[in-house]
Length: 257
Image 1 (cartoon, rainbow, N blue to C red):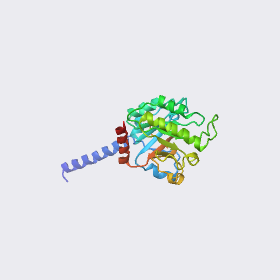
Image 2: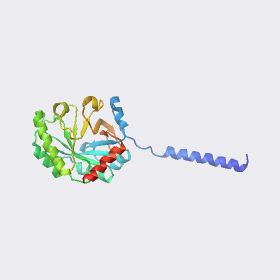
Image 3: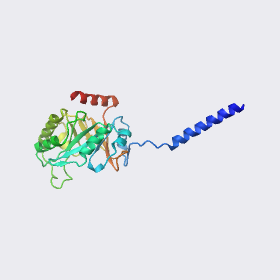
Image 4: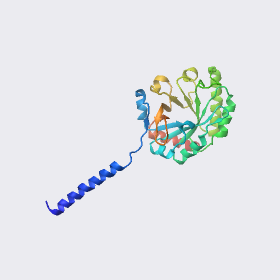
């Protein structure tokens, strides 16, 4: 071996060492996770289009970190009942947009408030942005509420839901999405409102076992998700389709506007 060959070999070894050192020193890419994962919904973690839903309880969010972690969409709580505006709504609304995350707003129904008042409250507080995702109507029983813990009849619930859905569609120009959970769905929504996309909560089983026969567009698969840029737990969701299908959704929103 000549001295020139020895130097070349030494240089190659040194280069490899430097590359390895740089790789080890580089910060790890933050990943999406779950603080209390459930084995029955593990498939959701691998679905190609991932999202979150947030409210004031997530505090101040670093939306750039959220985007870099691989979140493709976000639904942001806007209004509840006829007089509550989420304190973080507008902050989240505009910050998510600046970060390049497609986002939409949702309204939480309060069953003891007239539907037309809730519809007007949503319309007054949610900007009709041309790039927003379709609005969401969140329908669950208000069992946590001290002032409105009781259920109403299926007929009255559907009447309220239809009024608010129509107002949302008029306001945004897009057909709303219905979010629901296993407690509310069998009482009111089973076999109803099939023309609307559904977003279903199912944190301990696949959606088809909880909502048999129901087509769904979004799946909320955990409430204990971990996402870089958000302190504490956050709801994680998946879109029922691949990246190409999600791209078509976004294109259709632009076309509708």
